[in-house]
Image (cartoon, rainbow, N blue to C red):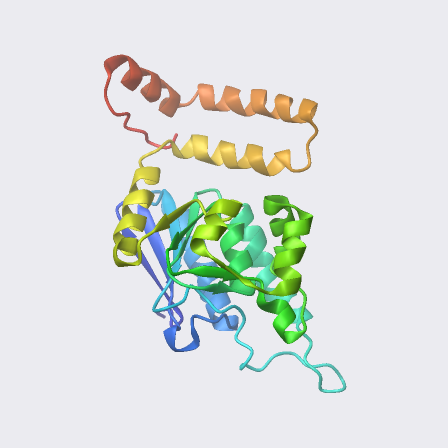
Length: 263
């Protein structure tokens, strides 16, 4: 069956997954989670896909969790949000963090609540100039989830992370870029074209090198310097024996653009 909450399109080596509940500002529900898992699996299994773009339809990237749907309740009838996190959000964040191919979060509009943390779990975040990010949980009496309390302090430090979480203030795209949360800001009018060009440029690169680099950076968060140096030597040996390295050297010597194959 065709997905009902998102679209997945492939243009050459770039797959674009578009969250498509614009009437709900692309808020997440259980169906969207399931369809996103399927789309990520499909992109990983397609050898022709080298880069994945995650974006939204309409005026928002996503408003986070859809609180209008039926959620688990405890014996007293109060909402229990834990099961939805364990079933949907926690596996998604781990999936994005460990995904073997580069994932670009392309914020066409606001990324609020859990969707901000989903975007930050991707490898690279780019944004339209009108977009903003917001840890909005305090506005409704919740704590940041979807990995936010782990990811955000590591990106901008615990003090700044707490300030954004406790104030629940929105961070405009340009300010988010200055803080290191967003890599590039594109003009709204050319956003789709600029994202496509950026993704295509990345997709032309060495896929094996990308995967090994992601692995090295992920493990650096728990390694000491000595362990990280050993890991770099191990991974560099793997990269140095690859076809892509041979092609890169040949292209450098021949003064031409390399034609990487991702192996």
